[in-house]
Image (cartoon, rainbow, N blue to C red; front, top):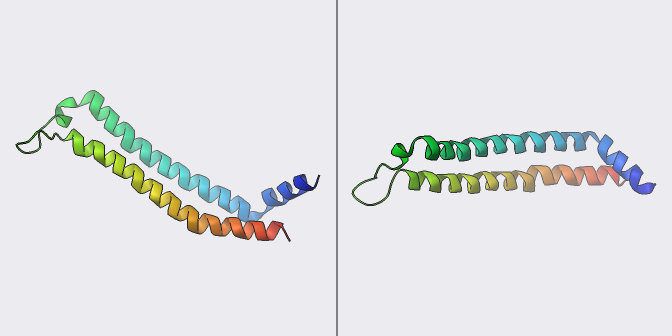
Length: 103
């Protein structure tokens, strides 16, 4: 029963509700950004091959190569953004919640 009491104290803590709201909202924002970038690229591959196959300069590189690389770089960037926020704001809120409910 003691664990159920602890769970109830965490769930009813206003800081926990704030953490849950902020993390969920930010996570969905990044998810939508990633989906737009990824599926935008996939849609270009499916419906505008001519654009992606345009050569850049005199070599063999096409427009699609840097765009595909950009999708990968974008993924790394938004992952870094999330980790930084999680390691600062979310960890601070988690520590405050833990301190409050274990009194």
